Image (cartoon, rainbow, N blue to C red):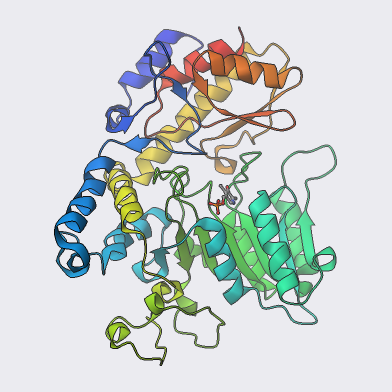
Length: 418
Ligand SMILES: *Cc1c(COP(=O)(O)O)cnc(C)c1O
């Protein structure tokens, strides 16, 4: 699409937007003057769907009226409650229903997956990760390496961009796997890098890693609900994600996990056990003979937090209704429009470090301010923009297709250059 650098054009894009009414389904925070803020922080914490309150209240009410009997008798019984989210989650990430579950939180799930899929040996013990991966992921892989009796200084293999470049070239990553794959036990990459906003080619990474006999897992914190994913088809071994960013599940929301079907019945895979992974027919016989559920649900340890599942369910209903195809189509336009306006109006102080190709990014643009970035960020904040600042010099914005508008983008860029 050919964009135009004027407000009328932005408003025309909004009136032609088939998803425009979805904004009404969310609570948009207000400024002190009572105007909607420009909310570009959906990559940190998604906004609250207005339906969340009713979903959570239903569970509060059933708890109030039934106590423990709610496990069986609640309108949506708590015993199988997590299953009410399965079909929608499978759709969202391109998985089979047996391959997805919500449990715990993200870093916990990453550890549980590494218990199963990081199985170092003397010859093959390394983990390949992006050098600038999110700190929690770095800590998780370092501590897993140590836990297995190896040394992170030797076993943590970091992928850097070329000198003078900010993002990683796919061909360089595939080359590295091809050259060093024999010593790599696990390739653990983000779907979208939190800092640069670069989206990786998960299908190619998986194929290259499998060719060398490595396991592959992805952290989809910034990809779930943002990009179209085909986890089953791509054949990655596992994936994990949080649900409070693009998925709008609320602060600290329950997280997601995917294990590929090919591993589900493999009893040789090491796994931590808990009663919620025990076969559902015999779980309440309270025996001590562990029989795993033959799906990814066998990675569950504890009975899950129902209030969190209820909140997330409200949001998944909205994703289901809008559909990832339509969301992604709007997202490419919103982010493309933001990039166009920044380039048109640039005063020389701003550099976008997120890749320009739509296939290499999602909603997010990471904007490097050459001078006074922090002051610029506070000025935007004072003017009613919520976006984030990442040391040393990056402002991240995420125009989210469910609730952001082309007018938001227009107003943001005007503020960026005043
Ligand atoms: C947001 C994010 C996290 C946060 O981890 P929690 O366990 O949810 O606190 C971890 N890793 C990545 C890549 C993230 O983007």
